[in-house]
Length: 548
Ligand code: AMP
Image (cartoon, rainbow, N blue to C red; front, side, top):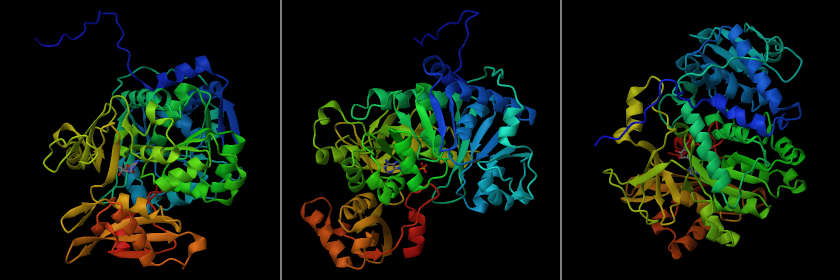
């Protein structure tokens, strides 16, 4: 018997899942709740919705039509939040441009995404000027500014954001359309080749929002997020829509604080002033904040911080928790919208002491609703969830990019066999927690055995003298590859620690059976700084180039 598809009477309405629906609930529950932009602007959700209407009218007057692509280059701001809604709600596509790309990558992404119009913060005008003669599709440029001073630029500007909003009506008739309409696109700079464009539909963003709410507010027993929280993203809005959390927080009607440019001292002051209680970031940002002298004068207790984008080390998690910050991990990719797992503690773990909890706070987490996940060996066979068997992580959820923009070959590689291949290695333990052990291409193969670079980094950073570390595999005639550690020492330990000290520290873990002897790095290089990617992650590609 085939399944029975439901019948719809002729007049029944097939309600599409659209981004505009996210705005309905907060207007009912909390129309006066605040949206704050750094120390510059604050207004209510009521005003947010009016400004979204104004922006849509303004963009329409500028010629933006359904299917067009609107690019944004801005710091994290209330304007960006307005674009998150107005652009997709019109049926256009929002391209969140990575402002930290090189000039060549920037123009590649602008042309590849076929941007029609660019909304650009005055701070990025010089960057845009440098590629202006190479635009293929850009017709208009709108200025976003935080200061009165107009920029001195040869670029032809077609308006200023606040002026075009002021001249436009607050009412806009956002029509319904197919929920599979493209809402957003952005580019991920992999370790090889040209940037890849991923894209998400309205339906995907809405479903991702619902599932993430369940993960943060229902299943998150140790750090439940509620509408009383105060949210501030510390993941740039260009990077996977700040993990989609602005949509989540808007639906919940929470107070939202957008910090502008990330400057550690300013961020810490803003957290204190606006009483921020919930954020998310890559480990580097939390590390940067905790290393700032101002941290001693700011009460961060009660701040919930989700760490993702790279592995959360026990040392960083512990340092945060000891200051009263509720630190835990989550995992996802640009290709996955992004949230796949969150390191929620189960009820029987809530009374554990911090040391025992650390393991689970730093695990990569439990799959959120509607995420199917499996670990497979090189032949694609599923591995048991025994906390030991390591393989590639494959996923299915309703919110995965269905391809790469104009790149069918890499899209098919991503989706081989109907599962999205994350390129990450890991295991799942009997409790259901995923642990990422490495990127497939970062794993070190020595003497035919695999060793996780993330595990070695986690060990080194537990050394009291180490502030940051990265481990890569370098070619070795005898063993194939050997681990090499690049280490930044804390200032007070500079030149007091040797390679042998680090290796002796590793030997303690060898004795405990935590790692095999061949995991002890062959070489330890001390340096002042570890190269980072445009989104603040350890840049192993550059490190490999430097030390290979
Ligand atoms: P991106 O597409 O730039 O967001 O990078 C996604 C990659 O970041 C993943 O494939 C992982 O390798 C890494 N990643 C994300 N979250 C975590 C995490 N919690 N622990 C370890 N690696 C992570």
